[in-house]
Image (cartoon, rainbow, N blue to C red; front, side, top):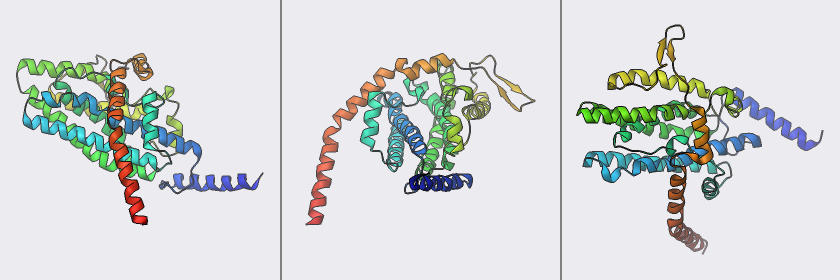
Length: 317
């Protein structure tokens, strides 16, 4: 065994001990290459999802029914942009540049959440996304506040606080509409029918078909499996749906007294795989819009770089 192999073995032993004691790995700490790559993949996908996720709701800002609703939606979309920036910054601590991550997204080498490849057809979708989509995100992301990688966990604290506000705002909008006209109530129910199953898919494929879950949990990046988080989301959503007065579109949904949780039907996993492969209703549109925004913003990045270089030269002089 070479000296280099001995040193790496000792470093790995120290890394494993840190994980075993539920302590944090920081950017300057040694980490296995697989751990670093897994984090880059997960954090980048999360960051891309926040940025792409601005599009479905951003389309409705100018069509909001009141100034108050417009201000709320505008603030929410702005929050999502901020979340993307926090997460790109966390990814950069792993030695990757956000420009490189953006290129990977635009080339299709990296993904974003499948949920954002569904269209927002009515204004009720603004409430349903807040209630169900952000609700699913909260279930997924709160445990990430305890992620073993320090910058990721700390970024998630701020993100989760704001996502909780988004979820409450969405529920309040739906509650308001359910107290309105029969047409408004029907619009809410139709929206819930479309978004329920894609929301369940947000947690990823079943555990048996999720190749990355076991290692991510062993490293402390994830704290719960996909199916555990999905179950938690269903149990949380059922009583909220009863308060709203909407019906969740699952004939198999029922309380299981023995498990003290709800039984529910399986989503169409073939649909999820199809969307992930780029064949969703809005995949091409979302990436085209992101590419155009990136290209249109090139002059801003160039100007900022030139300004930074000028200031650097002046400080040296």
